[in-house]
Image 1 (cartoon, protein in one colour):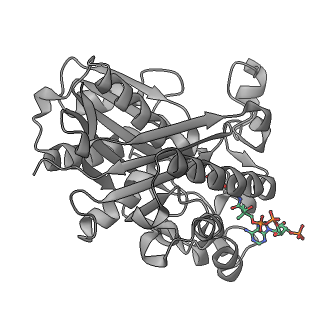
Image 2 (spheres, helix red, strand yellow; image 1 turned 90 degrees about the vertical axis):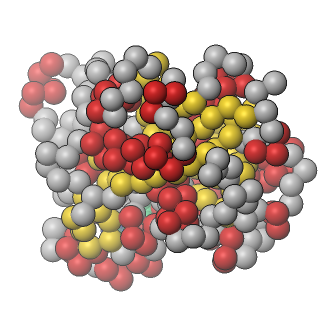
Image 3 (cartoon, protein in one colour; image 1 turned 90 degrees about the horizontal axis):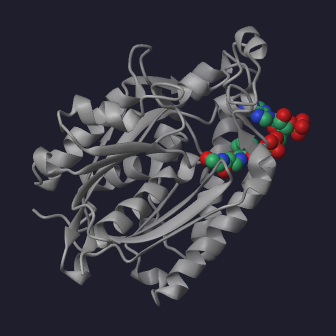
Length: 332
Ligand code: UT7
């Protein structure tokens, strides 16, 4: 049987920085409020002519180079994004595949908001274990600044731009394999976090009249409570089902939405500070890109080593959630 191994990681962060101080000149907020309530100090913002696919391509180039797998051997590209280059088509994954020069590959996007990277990890795992594909490029890429309302202080302080990518490939060695991936959703909470307009429910008139029709809206406080409850339950379950103790987790890599959510889940699992990967302070919430960007950070710091076990945990619009137990299994 083929197993799926997490071979490599790459990320891209745009150069422009938007600080809490900058935001305090745009809306009625302060650095103190944002820091205390979220842990965010700054976020990166893509240039106007920089597309989600551009950021995804940079991240993917790095991930492929570090994987030791030839571009010509990549047989599928999946991109998780809620800020695609184009509203309906073509998919951002297809654009990235072409920018990378991959030729004829299966490519598509998925929409699972901040849980997107965990979802595409589960899809890659399933395709590899079924024997249908061998080397899959997965990308979380977001230009959230394009769908953020910079007059709404309850959301504009949270979001940033960036991309992360990984190569998942087939192995016969079970020790290298992704152990498990959980994914879930509940549309009963759809209205907590959404872009309410711009889809098939919108009239042509409303679309042309409302410039803000595609911006994100969030009921932050209610989302916060469901996030803590769901994330904690999900990680406890995945550890129990796989008979793994939280002390065996070398790197807990949660979706970076809010320091207080991460702390609550980390405390519930009795994790030590050095087990918890934190990037929310410098990148803010980059939705589907946040987990691979965080993994890339520990990789580039030299603290992610071959064989070490990562626990991924995400939560986002939908509502969606997911977790994964992933050993880092580079080929080189
Ligand atoms: O990534 C996908 C999932 N997303 C999440 O998990 C995000 C979850 N939610 C959160 O992280 C938090 O709920 C927020 C950071 C968004 C908000 O923090 P909070 O502690 O839940 O604040 P709140 O919404 O309950 O608002 C408290 C007060 C309100 O004022 P009043 O009604 O008490 O007078 C808000 O109007 O803070 C006010 N407020 C602000 N004040 C200064 C809201 N945003 C701001 C702001 N600056 N930017």
